[in-house]
Image (cartoon, rainbow, N blue to C red; front, side, top):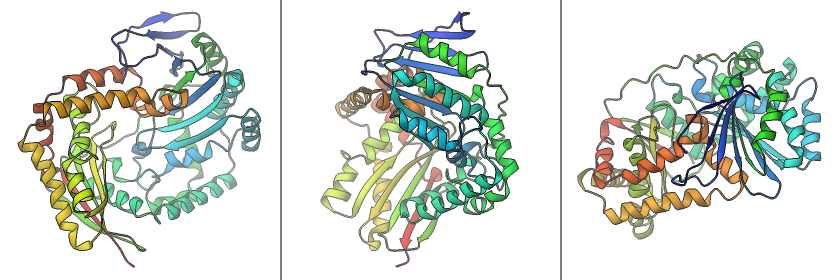
Length: 443
């Protein structure tokens, strides 16, 4: 989401640079976008924070990029391996240095990107940028460590499937997609994870393909000066060589008929439903994309008639959880719910579809739509109060769109939406685009 872009060349640091701020923008901070000669993009957001800095390295590779048969799970695997360190700074040394300065670091993997993040004092930026640049350029791990970590990943997988929510999520993706890599979950297919310890050489190839400067973004906010960040970036990151290889991801064929499947959970749980409707790739300028997000709230959120009836009045469900994410490629708009009585599963499924049907046949109240728009904007602004909240909240948008500009495009599109736009988008959520998964426990 963010602002209008004007490019200007800056020769001092051999960078391309953009500095953005407008009184008409929703995003309240001035920010800068610079790119090193090797393609590494650096987005800096100076903001008052009493010496605190949030430092994100966004790798624009996630499980979506795992297109080779038998080799899923490596994007998530490198979330682990990146903490193994380098010859200069082995993992134990890296950890001790981060702890010694009181910094807080972690990482996570998604379908579309991988994020490495730290919160630190601005006086420690030089050390952190040296450490981060070193591990991204010079990651080193022996085969024994590789096998140990891949075994740990399988342990993580086994732990994850003790949660019925993860089981239904995995089954929904597997059923909804035929060709696209969204078919597998972020952690990967179980058989591939089991085979991972035999793929040491492939792991190095994967890292070499995707951990390249032109496929990464430094996203830094807090008590900083852009000129200082750029000087350090040139010092520590300029030696990082280009070499990104575009993944060969297959386009998903159009879905033409409803899909459904059932899955058993090895344990005790209330029945669950996962219902996904195919949707387009995220585009902040598209009324279709933004209207689809609003339908998630209007039709299934805590203020919706469906929620009031199924959860509050009839008490048929323990929760209704809409998940209408922004994705790089066409994905799903999803509703998860847990049903109190197995005899009500079909009733709940029908009520969810009736909620969609209502928005297909009726125009949402203008005031209700206007109030939701205001809440969207207010909620966004309230999430920008600290450097870590800002970077965490914007990481996905920055990773999948390449910058903050999409923020401004998003809110401009949001402001332009009419009740008719909501109805037009709801009509796309027809049965032929739907996948329904039913989960039941075995105990």
